[in-house]
Image 1 (cartoon, rainbow, N blue to C red):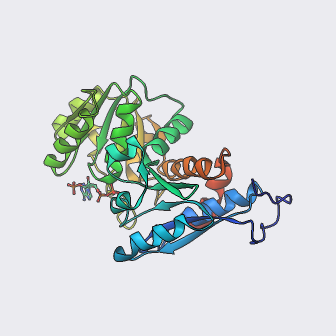
Image 2 (image 1 turned 90 degrees about the vertical axis):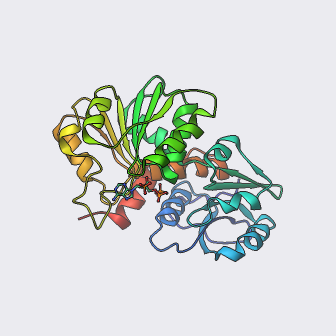
Length: 297
Ligand code: ATR
């Protein structure tokens, strides 16, 4: 393991430095470089996390080159999470079920793809909500890429039931079918209509918003009407800008336990960090690094 013995100074980049990349386009406001570089620094690891903008047509060339360089691996983001799967030597089974890869390891020149988004969500729920997913009844709002990663992971980790409500109902049905195709008949689509939500939420332990509703600059919006939310649930939002979304504010007023979206971002990164370095990620330092650059006033 390349180490820098002085924890308080930046590791100098030298011939022993190992690289980790972030492949996407545009990378604009990504928080991953700040989070990972702070994690490397705090542990005194001689690693460097580099943003690498890659145009659509160049993904194959870039990934082939990276596999031959001093990279421990990389993250993949929009728009490459799906197409990256054709550029790798292997894709792990959860990532295959999700149909997208966000984390790649390189070992002996072999690239292997994983998806840590759903695992990141579960870890953040365990850390902030203090509970295990096993046996829980979950309701998810949304059926996009993030919803897919979370639903597949929850089903594998033993959620008792998963209800999915989405603006476009056909997408919720399609996702439920794909989740159940993993072998456990635990998932069903439910209508996003207020009356149906109200009934379904009475039998829900954990509510998760996976839609972008409530995200800056539309902080005033909430994916469900206030009156359908009972007290006593765990309410999670994957939106992290702002950290306290309208949904979370309403949930707090009703006495629900809250799980902020920043946790999923940090923990999906923590899982990758461990894959690349073999070390447990310094999660608190990663939260701090992000809060410093993105703190909502
Ligand atoms: P991500 O990769 O972040 O999951 P996505 O794949 O674009 O993003 O999915 C966005 C999700 O948010 C979808 O479930 C979308 O609903 P539709 O399938 O009906 O498009 C949901 N969403 C986005 N804007 C919404 C809005 N204003 N009201 C309700 N749902 C919304």
